[in-house]
Amino acid sequence: MSFKDDIAEDIHSVFLVEDEFAEKHMIDGKEMLANIDEVKTQRHNNNDQEWGNLKKKKKSIILYVAGKDFGRLPAANRILVLDGRNYLVQDAVNDNGMFILTLEVA
Image (cartoon, rainbow, N blue to C red; front, side):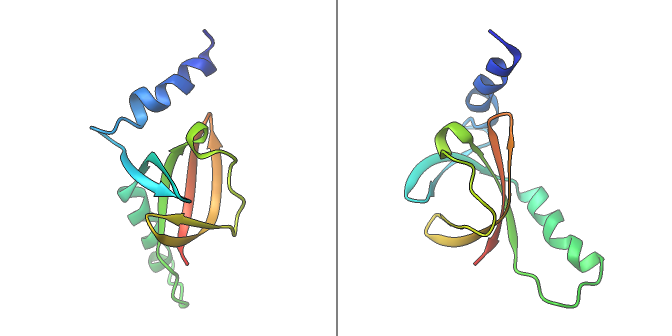
């Protein structure tokens, strides 16, 4: 087994364990385990206030989901439906099979 295989296995056995970090969410009509990072989301939303941005920025969330469950990495500016609410994909990164999505309330 390679290191990449170990990381891929850890996504569900460590990072997306329902009893510890992850919760079931409906993402684009498909139920899957995901983690909304409340701490990073709060920091991300506060950064604009600290830098004195005058225009009102919409709230964003940081979502972690297994790429294997999600499918193709979503493109920026694509609408994603999370738990019945529309979000605009601001950024999407594939970190060794774990997708890190920055979503803005649409």
